Image (tube, rainbow, N blue to C red; front, side):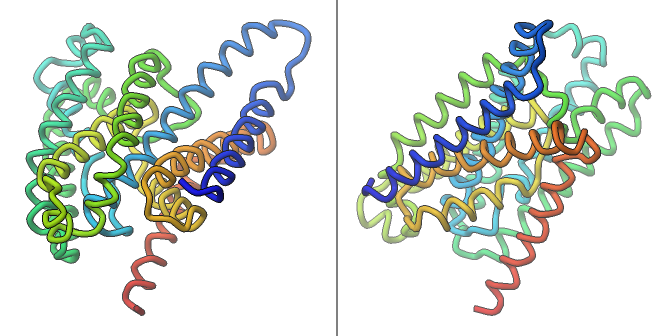
Length: 318
């Protein structure tokens, strides 16, 4: 990494630390200070974990797909997660799911997501990655199919069981499931470290299938491995706050624009830091300044959708 990249990452890290301190200590009075700090600390760690997961997962997925318009959510990863939730509730019942240990349930979800993602999206992107319109169309069709199957299961469920699935279908940064934070943070850290270790191979893979294979890269193996990392990261973020469709698109665009580099040693940490700054800073604005008069997830989806349309129009113009 060059000097400019080091300075950029250092600046982003300092900005994140400043925003985190402001979010942690603003408005703390004399009483119950320790309890408030402990509560805010857990939520801050969860927000950073979610943000880093989404940012790194999007950059990895765009590298695999060789396109900056695609995101895991657009291609149906979140819909796949909701389908798994629906299948578990339909087969085990809400009582069975509630009685299932949270960590074991989460690990089962991550494992199933990784295998299904490698099977479905791996074959698609490895063989059709250069045919972008077909890739987008197939990903959208898979997402619609997953949502339709989930919708069918929820229609035949008991209303109480339906409420359990519905609660997992909407993103909320205000109510973060911190019970999964230890295992979620551990999985996120491990996945990001593996992605950084694979950065040289990811740089080669970004050149395209034919150049990468000619340089000795096992392209299909790298595609499957990268998609499994994406599945783990998406599972963590969705389990903690729910599905977020377009946030990763904004983060990846900012990471590419600020770093001005194709090196994943700069892109991946930049995406994680930028996402964390946006989530923590946005949550601070909505909680402490606006008094929760609006919802951060709604604003993110609106801005991300506009940015997605901009990228499509820009691509067509070119």
